[in-house]
Every structure is written in C-alpha cells, then in structure tokens.
Image (tube, rainbow, N blue to C red; front, side, top):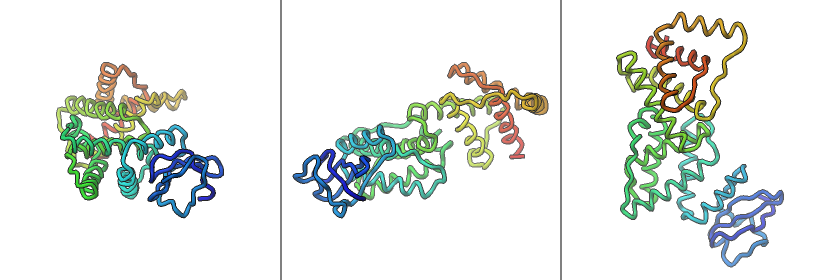
Length: 285
C-alpha cells in the first residue's frame, strides 16, 4: 500500500488518505483515526480495509458518504457487491458502492423509524430484470442477518434497479424511465399482436434485453445511426418488405416513443426492432 498520509480524519475508525502518487482513498481500521491529525503518516499494517474510486468525483462522493453513514453499512454493501459480481457477467460501474450503500443505509434508517415506501415498478422490475431482482432478494436476506432489520420485499426491486443501473452506466432517474419505456413498449407490442407473452420464456427474456439496451440508447442520445451506404439502404428495404407485419409494429413503437418521450427512432433502430419482433413471434427462429 506504500506511504500513506492523512488528508482528513473522518472519525476514530475511518481516514481519508493519499498515497505516494497523490491518489486518494478511504481506509478503515479499529482506532485508526483516534487522536490523529492531517499530514501524519499511517501505518499500512493497521489498515483493515481500503476503498478507492478511479474518478475524482466519485472519490469525493465516497468521502462525503463515509461521513454520513455507519461504517458497517459500507462494509455490508461492499460484501453484497462482491457477491453480485460473482453472479453476473456484466461489468459494474464503480459508483454502485456509493449509490447502493447510500440507499441501503437510508432504507435501514427508514425502517427503524417506522417509515415504509412502496415501489410502484416492483412488478415490472421483477419481470424485466429477474436476475437482478433475485440478487436484490439475496441482499435483503444478508441485510436481515447482519443488521436484524427486516426490509420490505419492495426494497429488492430498488436494489435490483441499482444493479441494472450499474450494468448500463446510467443514472437512477433514467433507469426508472427506461423501465417505464420497456413496460409501455411491451403494452404496444402485445396490443398490436393481440397476445400476451410468456414472461418465463427464453424468447421473452431475449426481447427484454434488447428493449433494455434500446431504451438506454435513446435516453443517452446514442441511437444507432442510419448507415449511408447503398447496401445499408437495400438491407433496410429488404427487411421492411419481407417483415411487413413486424415492421408496422416497430413503427407503432416509434409512434409511442415519439408521443411519450419526444424521441425519434432512426430507421436503423426500427429495423433492429423489427428483427427482434419477428424473433419473439416466431419462436426465436
């Protein structure tokens, strides 16, 4: 860990330090900050745990968070994240430690004060992000074991959204809108085909994954641009002609997105959506 000097004493057990390269980190250890002062060296052997963010903004947020929540909540969240990382393949944005620790600590405090919040999107989250929802349920069990606080089932949905948010590199407000867009798009699609899809099927799961990234691109202003080559145009025309029914449904989704979110779908996005609509309606073929 090298030479460490104190930048700020957060409390008796938590220090903000800088290493020999000027990098900032949070270090914890029993009595580590007791009667210590800024500028003093820290014995790395006394450090039990360290937390470092690559981004300076995130590092500052982590320092501020450590001043506001109990250390055990940070440690618990780190343990939860390590478990989550072992269960999913997508890389997670490093800010998950900050946002999830903040949420869990606040949820525990609310519960202890007898304040409960419901999650209106719980059913949608359970359906569209089943893996993350199961991980949220695991987190609730571990929180209960370690803190003796029994959070409501709706908190599993909140935790799931934090995980998905870290997977997609979005912010939480966009994450709620992405979930609502998926829900609205599915309503348009099921109305168009006059059918209800099996939420447990592999085809449905594949389609939701496409809609997840489709919505993410729209909210981040990164829609797939139309290819300008002659072959690109011919390919789009071929798909539109050969999959007329599914292309028309894609256009209905485009109308929904325009009217609800004031965002325009590129022709390329319509074609990709058409292909996925065909797949879910023909058993993945």
